[in-house]
Length: 233
View (spheres, helix red, strand yellow):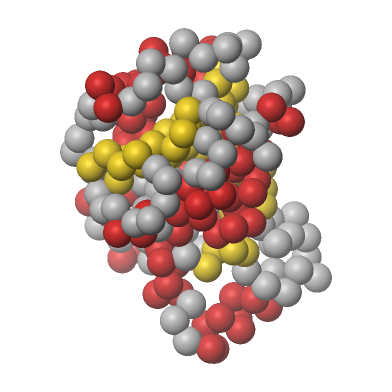
């Protein structure tokens, strides 16, 4: 496990972000920028009130050097294309893409001050594997995958940029799709490994991408998806 790094987690008060903060905070200097600090009470973290769709991060609240940046806010908007309003696409793009861009731009200088910084974004398995009712989220997360590769090329070798493309994970964001036994059972059965993912599993992969053991990886989209993206059983 990595130690003594300065890590900024955008949206780290619930779900995958909270699991990551819980994992990293004992041995690292973790800064959490999110709308609420309810989930991180009692953890050894530095909290910064922040709304990714509205605010600019106050860099005076951050250290002079950042070794890691993780953008967690996102949306899961699963509806037929015919029923989606244009506003749904723009809203999803704002939180998934523009929020990531604005947040990263505001702290880029701090990342460039690090000897070996790492940036991690989140996509979705539905970008590389076409799935019905995912048009809005796939459009915005597809942009994240393009951004990941472009920035990885532009920032190399100073800053590594990677993304994780999960399938559905048991988090508050996905709760409406998993809120009874039948929904949970069907979600589990869709995956070749027989279950959906956990926030802790995604946090482990994120920590790997932030740490030195992934130091020869950049521009990668890691599908952590229980096999659903590549296997048919």
